[in-house]
Image (cartoon, rainbow over all chains, first blue to last red; front, top):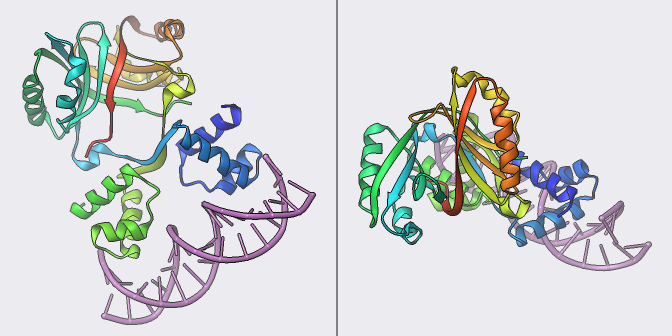
Length: 143
Length: 143
DNA sequence: GGTGAAACGCCAACCAT
DNA sequence: ATGGTTGGCGTTTCACC
């Protein structure tokens, strides 16, 4: 993992359709060498996969919210139950004012209410506090 | 935006390296037609870009935290000042117990302290409450 | 909008340096 | 790690439907 690897990752985060010829030129290597480095980054799991970034609002998910979940038991074991709720995009065990923090996305506030109902249905959940996002200033990939 | 478009988006989220021939076969279209649909989805901004998913821990960002920021003024105007802090991955204006919610990632708790210092340096910031992530149960793309 | 085929360009694999 | 070469596949475009 040197600076060239980091440059390659940055370039691919910006645009994963770039050819190895272009990548190589950008970092001062041949296309073959660039290709080999990227292959190893994938192999080692540093690059997990190549994917697309989708405008969620265009898909009808206009509302984003964060939900602080309080639990009476260790909630780490409830990961599967939470994962079964499709509107949950992220779930983290946290240190602080709750047990788990969820990021959820759905069409509107009516659907948000329904998501909260399902979260309450997970074993051990004793309460939730919801933070509704009014405007996303930015969501980006780190350099 | 019909079901075929949604299927194409789902397939590309899973693996954006799939060929148009494969995509077409999966949704029951020719490769040319699949190509045309994806081109239009990009043109309309539904697909923002194709990118890679990176293991942040492998890049030395082992600690994730959420920071609730209190402000004395309308913080939406501070987006540029916040964006200048590279460790901030997301920034949202929220309804609830603070003005802004940040998602931050960095090497360790020492660096977290330094990020908080810089957040305090942004005009209008009167306080912060930090939620440290102990374990990420999942971070995924929505179906 | 979709089809099918043809032309082009890029990737992947090789090897000698 | 380079640079040249080759084969094969995917992308892109086109006339046609």
